[in-house]
Structures are given as structure tokens and as C-alpha cells.
Length: 332
Image (tube, rainbow, N blue to C red; front, side, top):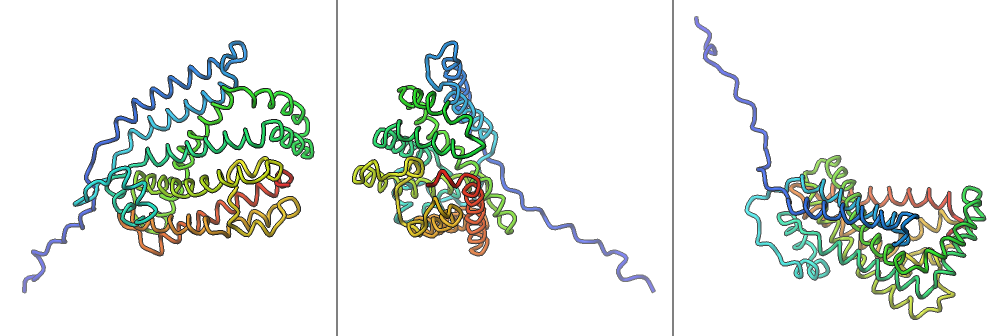
């Protein structure tokens, strides 16, 4: 009797799902090149022999690195989404993030826009830092920093140099402008770094997400939290006496919505950092991160989104605790 299975053929392997290719954000390349050139010019004008721009080397380097980042990002293809919804306007996304964040994140999944969100957050940081420096005065900030450095063996030798040179630089208008520029640049790099960690976490938890989707989600989370934080901080900055404002901690924000109020940063720096993570804005950021990852990716479940959000919170908490253990005297 013949073998009934002699004509049997193994079924073909299942097709691998491949995302359709999409164009790259080519405009970023030319923006990046322009920033690279501008950064080099600023750095050259800040060389000690030229010294036209005080602090120009640091400012130029930051602009140069931002240009390099954007140029590299221009080679990352945009995500592909089946049956994408109509693109929301920039104004709709900026206002909707407060009233209908899930809808905004779903739209960012197909149309990852982020420039306005990062620029506004960066400009808010720059404006607040400028106002803070003028209100508290460069003298008090520099002297406080130098005093704390003198108490730390690692920085003791550089304390007097910071007190003299730092104060001279801090008063220069070009140095203050450079600090504002670096605040905006830091906003871009902060989003890029957190987005990379978030994307890695999504993949580890078994989800699927494109880097541009993660980048846009993190950008709008940062925008929402920064807007609330800085607006409140501006009000507190001009209501409180400058003598009651911490010259270092206050440079970030003056929002006291966490348990850090109950702990002395000078006496218990590690416990203070832990307490500051338990607050209204911290939980708001955590919820936004989980919602954004769930709604902004190709396939990210609720458990994966919350897992990534909590993991990021713990990672940054551990980093803050380590920094507080090493430099706790600066919190006093």
C-alpha cells in the first residue's frame, strides 16, 4: 500500500509582519547642520583669546550637540499606522493634553509632532531660570554654591575660583543668554534620553512602539508638567522673600506639593529625595506616562505601560538618592 502522505508538503512559515516604510523627517538634517555651524561660531567667539561671548564655549558646544542630535534623528523613519486619523493642529494638541490626553496621544501615534511642545517647555525653563537669577541675585547663588563646595573635600580647592570667576561670568549678559539657550537645549536632550529609556522598557515588557511615537509622548508629558510647574513657581518666586528661596533647589521649581516639606534636606538628604517623589505632580507625570505609552504605541498593554512608567520612576529615584548621598550638603 502506498504512503497516503507522500504528496504532503510542509506549510509555509507564517509571514513576518513588517511595518511599511515611510519617509524620513529630512527637514531635521538641514536644521541640524545649521545649528552645528552656529554652535561652532559661538564656541569660537567664546575662546579666551577672543572672549566676545562670555561662556561661549559651553553654549556653542550645547548648540553644536543639539545640531548633531537633530541631524542624526533625520535618518530615523517616521512610523507607519494603518488608517491614520486626521492630524490634530499644534494648538489642539497643546491644549488637549490637559483636557483629553488619551485622544492627543492616539493622534501622536500616527502623527508624532513634538517641536512646539519641547520649545515651549524649554523657553519656560529658560524664562524661569532668568527670573530666578535676577530675583535671588547671582551673588547669593554663587556664594552659596562656593560655600557648599568648600565643605566638600572633592570640590574644596575649586571653591574660591568659582566664587570669583563664577560671579564675574554670572553677571555677564552673554553668559545669562547662554544659560537660557542651554535650558532649551537641555529640554531636547532630556526628552531624547527619557524616550530612549521608555522605548527600551516597552520592548522589554513585550510591547511595540516606534521611537518617534515615544519621543512625541515624552515631549508632551514634559510640556504639560513643565507648564504647570513653572507657572506656579513664577507666582511663588515673586510672593516669597528672596531670602527664603533656596539658591540651588529653587532653580528647578518652587512647587511644594510633595512630602519633601516634612523632611530636612540638610539632615536627611536621601530621605528628602525619596519624599519629594510622593506628590501631586509626580503622580500626574506617572499617570501621563502610563497613558501616553498605552495610547501612543502600536501595541502597548496597560500592564506594560504602567510597568515602564513605574520602572522609570524608580530608576530616577535611585539616581537622585545616589546624588543626594554624595552631595547632600548642597541641599542644606
